[in-house]
Image (cartoon, rainbow, N blue to C red; front, side, top):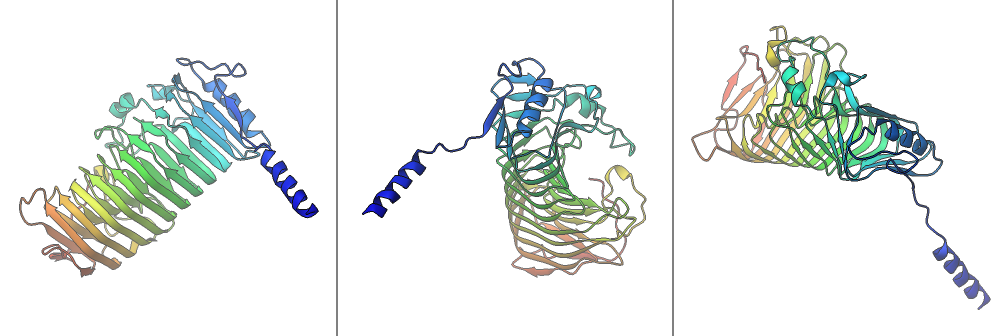
Amino acid sequence: MKLSFLAMLLCLLLASTPKAHASVFDVTSATYGAKPGSDVSTALAKAWSDACASPSASKVVVPSGTYKLKEATFRGPCKAPIEMQVQGTLEAPADASQLTRPDTWVGFQYIDMLTLSGGGTFDGQGALSWNQNDCHKNKNCKPLPVNLRFEFLTNSKVQDITSLNSKFFHMHVFRCNHTTFQQLTITAPDESRNTDGIHIGASTAINITHSKIGTGDDCISIGDDSHEITVTDVTCGPGHGISIGSLGKYKEEKDVTGIIVKNCTLTNTENGVRIKTFPDSPSPSTASGIHYEDIIMVNVSNPILIDQLYCPYTQCEQKPPSKVKINNVSFKNIKGSSFSPLAIKLVCTTGIPCENVELTDIDLTYGGNKGPLTSMCSNVKPTITGVTKALGCATSSLAPLPLSKK
């Protein structure tokens, strides 16, 4: 009886103990003094510094309202898990020359257990920069700022935010591990050059899910040294599709392995699901274990594409072959409509052809049944099952093909 009483007393004591809550650092508090309509750069930097130094979990809050933000870099390591909750809208300078770091507007670096959330918007105000972007004709063009740059993050989450009208890439993910991006909205008009939604490089165990992306370039692009990348339940359009690459442009690029893209919908995009590598790549590398599955295409040009003659704006030496070896790739259960009559184009490199490529259950129609769809394969012999008639790589070529420019 005595033991039962002691146990009950212990339970009551535990129930009455207050739970630990994250310390809140509100940029509009008297301590920091930020106000809607003003530049919050200083207030936000100070709030981050204080929160990052907190020995317990902390939260930096930007309340509802519209604020100017000239630029910011939020650097760790922090002493405990940290969240930045942006509930309002942060506006970048329209003129990119005002930034002291020309390639970044907002950056997060060297942080473990970061959460970026809040339902707010990072507005890059990129229209002026899109008009000034000459990268389509100048391979030595000046860098333009990325809306959100994530570098050296671990065990982190970016969720429930909007990236609007970035001057260049919306999100650039580099050297990050075990990080999830979810419930994002990424938006820019289709004429905005080089506004990739999320670009990933040199990162492992990245998960992108339940997001809506529409831009002027790739919705998602995955660069070299990327591993265990999973993309699920993403809607893409407008844009250039969901891409591996481009690869093979620079010396000593590292392999890409373990990419899964599943349950995604692409609408009115210039490409669907693709792998793109440059010809005349300076160093050998591989791209393997790449799987696209359960994809819906709506009026998409080039729905299924391997392009090892990728040469945007003709800024490369026209000397194939690419030195990127593509192996163990599958396209499964891809359905919907193609805007272009050529629905499947697998153009692999001479000398080191693609291997273990699989086409399974491909069911595409040509823009409201305009006519038959076609396919083309070069330097690849895919395994084909359950594919709509005339989509089984009906034409094959071993001869050199012209470079592609998109």
